Image 1: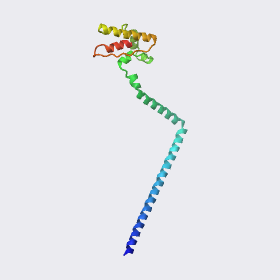
Image 2: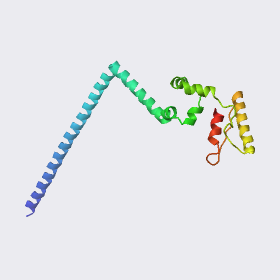
Image 3: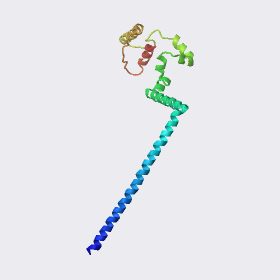
Image 4: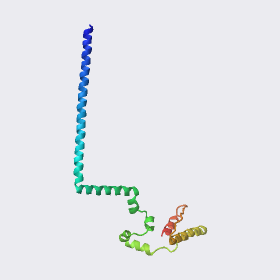
Amino acid sequence: MQEPTLQLEEQSKLKLVNEENLRQQEESKHHQTFFASIRTAVTMFGERFRAFVTDRYTVTATVIGLTLLAVGVKSAKNGFFEARLWKPSLVSETSSITVLEALQHPFQVSRRLFSRPQDVLEGVVLHPSLEERVRDIAVTTRNTKENRGLYRNALLYGPPGTGKTLFAKNLAL
């Protein structure tokens, strides 16, 4: 009785060994095909890269395209278009005049050049003590500009409609 049981055990062991050998052979085939596909891909990539590098037109077009892409990304990060094209009106009115702006809007530029307000507080109504302090800021700013010094900072605060923006615009002009 023990002998048939031993034979069955040996047969089951042989089946397991055979199955393990088949599995290893399949894995080996899978590894071989995997490495063959990697070799093929690397070879194709090398051939394409060599063809790319030897074609002067495609290299030039690629370099120009990547340069334009980098400039676009850099200008978008720095807000170039926002700062140059969509400037707030106060900034565009008080900024220095560029040649491009003079060519695009000659009448507005000439009006800005010839109609500068003489008095910084023109149109601004203030309490006399405050008016004296604000005039001091204007005189200091004018002297700083003439002497090419460093400008002082000023913080204007108060309720809406009290002339802060009007004073800042006149001071900037």
